[in-house]
Amino acid sequence: MTASPSRGSYKPGRIREQSRELILQAAEVEFARHGFQGSTMQRIAEAAQVPKANIHYYFTNKLGLYGAVLENTLNLWDTVFNELSSNDDPADVLSRYIDAKMEFSRTHPTASRLFAKEMISGAPHLSAYLQEDYQLWFKQRMSVFDSWIKQGKMDAIEPAHVIFMIWSSTQYYADFEPQILIATQTDTLTEAAFQEAAASIKHIILKGCGIRT
Amino acid sequence: MTASPSRGSYKPGRIREQSRELILQAAEVEFARHGFQGSTMQRIAEAAQVPKANIHYYFTNKLGLYGAVLENTLNLWDTVFNELSSNDDPADVLSRYIDAKMEFSRTHPTASRLFAKEMISGAPHLSAYLQEDYQLWFKQRMSVFDSWIKQGKMDAIEPAHVIFMIWSSTQYYADFEPQILIATQTDTLTEAAFQEAAASIKHIILKGCGIRT
DNA sequence: TCAATAGCTGTCCAATTAGTCAAGATTTCA
DNA sequence: TGAAATCTTGACTAATTGGACAGCTATTGA
Image 1: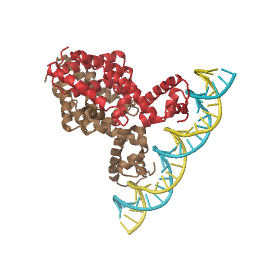
Image 2: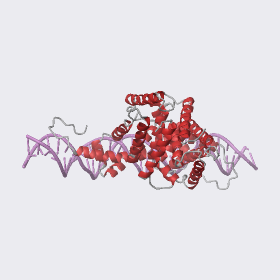
Image 3: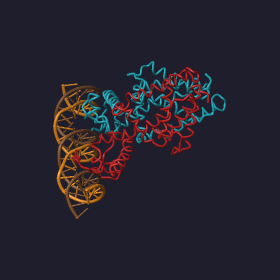
């Protein structure tokens, strides 16, 4: 609203994209750690190494910034969600999906944490995104499981719970990292540790669902 | 520091306990939903239906209140943690433990969420509690699993990952309730839903670990 | 009954922080 | 080059909020 482009035959600068991205990244880390209210524009500005007023040039207000971060993050999630494709071989599909989710936890822990915090807070800013598309996606995947059950390819377990188990166990390694580190008495989760965890999860889920590998 | 009991042969009132408890309960809900920074003393006061200044009479400051809430909560957790007793029958032990954890998620969702938020934030106020005792507990349970593996009572899976799977999947139904509600298109998680979830988790974990029931 | 102690709260204050703004610097392209 | 558009930022403001505190009421036990 500050400067409205009246009829300028101007170039929609690419500085814009760079600066926005820089700020968004800093904001994601800040929001994931301290939540919406707990984050300060000042700290985000410092992390992004720009003056605070510069953030307000690119984003209308704090909520707008938060929304932009959330949207950014949700696009990432979508990619991983859709990794759960339908296929005739449940062992193959679920293995891939668990690996993809686990890889996401490893490479995008802050995105996972941001999402988790939103959920725990009652998803006040997420409910808009998680409506019809999401429910459709969920229903479709459920029906794939159902068909596997009908074909005797897996045990008769309510598919929703299987999906929830995959989500929870994989996200745990991003969201609850401090607890894992303390419990296992290590100080970083290595890539090898993630692979070992993924292997364990795959073993338990597949075998636990009666899926032949 | 306001009124120091110099040498009063007085009775350490029981009003104290009541008021403290009232405030703690309101604070737990508030902190679980909005986190430490996001919570305001004013809102907690309103929820507890006491003037804000009254909270400051019982608790030194916001951090002190938060610490008290956290300590309260951790005592609850301990009880459930210790449900994982050692016993010769893994099916029995794990079944009971999963049920206990699930029951905790159902009856104490705010405690679960508070704990989760702390973890996701890097456990800044929790690290003190989660040191030696916790690590000892974890090691001991791990060795129980190891003995089961040695006795051929379960598959050779790194015990830590099994415990993490139990924790994550059971806590999920408290922490990520909004997501579950949206996905399953219901508006409350009934006791029956919890039992069904517990049954699924038990099926998958036990069978997945190769534990005979 | 009556101090002494414990419990309560309205009012105020200082610090933090989101957001504004206007002036200036830089970039773009005709 | 130059003027229009875009970008930058220091300084300021208003609102929120944690916390202090003095004076008050209620409870207790002798």
